[in-house]
Length: 137
View (cartoon, rainbow, N blue to C red):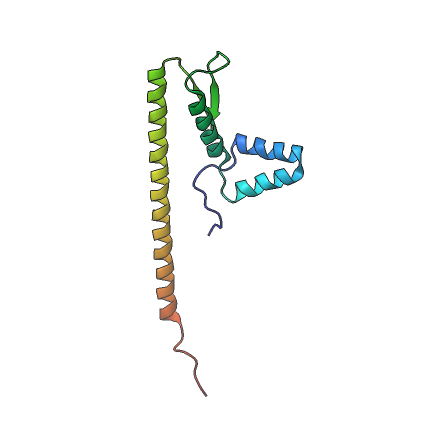
């Protein structure tokens, strides 16, 4: 039995870099980042949400005049310059991420049902093997 919930990759290059940078800046920051990662924090997802929020504020035009490249996990997302295609790509990736979350929830429910079934089986076997209560002499 594991004590932590593992629904995704926890130790990605970005999370390791954040951890190392945290320790380099000030060791309590490094400990805070380590605790966040160990208790299920997803630094890549947080970075992706921040990036999406910033890109929505800035609109589709980049203020420095060049197309932006973002690293998301192991995939590089680059603007093609075609707003319609970029919108289609964002919507498709968002839909796939929703499907991935739905599948992860489904797998988690299956694991919970399997764990409950195994526990019920254990308790049933334990009741059958248990002695007939304490005997009074």
